[in-house]
Length: 461
Image 1 (cartoon, rainbow, N blue to C red):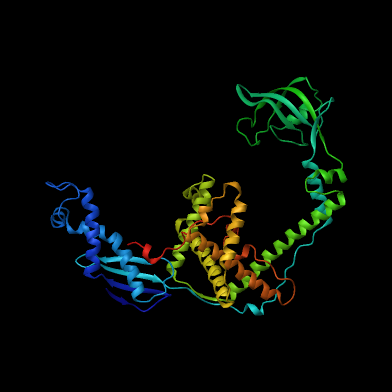
Image 2: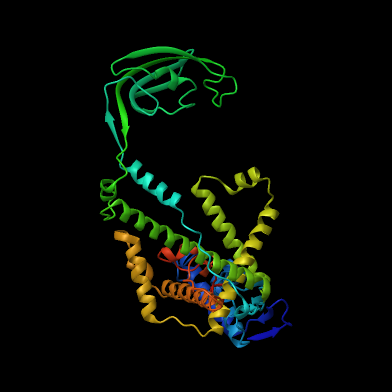
């Protein structure tokens, strides 16, 4: 196969490929065998027409076009191997001629390069936020609220009570309120379901029915009732008091965490808050280290890689919007952004993600970090355990999934090593948390097969 290569620009190699007859013939024969099975040639059963006659009937150009589907990725992979190129990601292929001899222009992104800044000279410390007594007291009060009960009382309804009632409200002939045996908590200055409703039912007793009118302001948010008079009829069935347990040892024992006393509960809560603060400080330290290195490091990244990553950024954004039933077009309209602006934002995000990944990979290489098979298996077991009963082991048995897990663990080790080196200036080394990847939450899930990059063999025309 004839291959010529232009001078490398922006870490992208441009190959001019002229496909040899033997390779072309192999794929033409495959195309013929595929097309002849679904083409009717007069005088022959499907699949039985000789290739010479078949080409005469449908035209050689149709056969060539079909052959290119498998010929292009095969030829591109062979050309990259022949030129001994360290390809990184999916090449871009342009078929410049189809006949008589197919010719391709192939842009091949090379492995990005990075000159990492001197992280051994960074001096940063893990600085967890101080846990206050107020935080502990608030947590205890939350536990108190979670254990509170609503107990029936025989007295008039008061603010703070829960009312079990039926309500019907009309604005003219239009029904605007309708609830049967609903539970309604009375809160001060409540504007729901409509202004003045709470004040009108305060003082009612179980078994009582009350009718009243409410004038609604013109600026009230709700076209159904704004500026109208609402005629209400309320029947109260039950009054319930919010019964808060005492904050004492019994509360601690009822919290379900194995505490035997209030003091033990507060100590346990303080430990939890301190661990959370430490984790947040670790995350902030790692982010700060990476931010500093991103500023001090020099990168050379092929534009084609950035374009591919930007496509993934846009795809992720579109999927996120779809979960809220919002189309990308609606989002652009509401945000006042054009397609070009959205693409530029995606490219900026993609470039940052790529730089982080490349930087972390280079640290792993520099520090000679490796991930053992045992570590991969341990991570798999953790992922399956976190996934719960619905865990599917087949998701992590493929080579792609295990490669993804290995890469994730290597990134984690790299960030942990960075933090260890920086913290050696003083303080305790930080465990790797969210800074280890551009998508921190991915570590909590069983990874799917990576769709971010394709091998040259998977490229198309």
